Length: 244
Image (cartoon, rainbow, N blue to C red):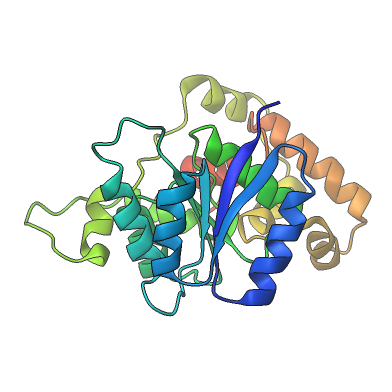
């Protein structure tokens, strides 16, 4: 198994050190650099050339969106393998999410993600696929359904509508699966909470059922939606109209 080389750009020392220590324990991930601000981050990225950069938005000098934009621009004409960007932040406003993707971010996660899901996000991003936190997935899908303005755009926020990652509609096979094996009322309730970003324990508490029962419902939902994980299930639920 080849190692995924990661750089962490995070201004909070304890968060950065803790995340680095946690990721170093993962067999296929190697942290090859750290930075406490945007300028240092760009220098480390240029030197280390990691597979994935984990970048916070709220950096003290150059914010994470600008770091992402500069990194992607510097790689436009590069022959070397491109570094992919996973935004890891507390910011979940529509402007932040769309500006990050407009700047070239490959994936977006909130900081309250579990280590297991963060590792999966890094692996998914490294493979060239977008990993989107279920909590902010509806923001991305909402924007992809809006018409793209034809006039010239200048700011990062304005470019967000024109440059967002396109999420296509459900393929025919997946749509047929949903129609053939419709979700029960309880499964729809669980799915709505998955889209809202709840974990199994939170879902169990909200629906007054056991965690074991939640796991069974989640497994059935993944099977019926032909989804590999909760994030994909959330995206497909929003895309198909199962959840508004």
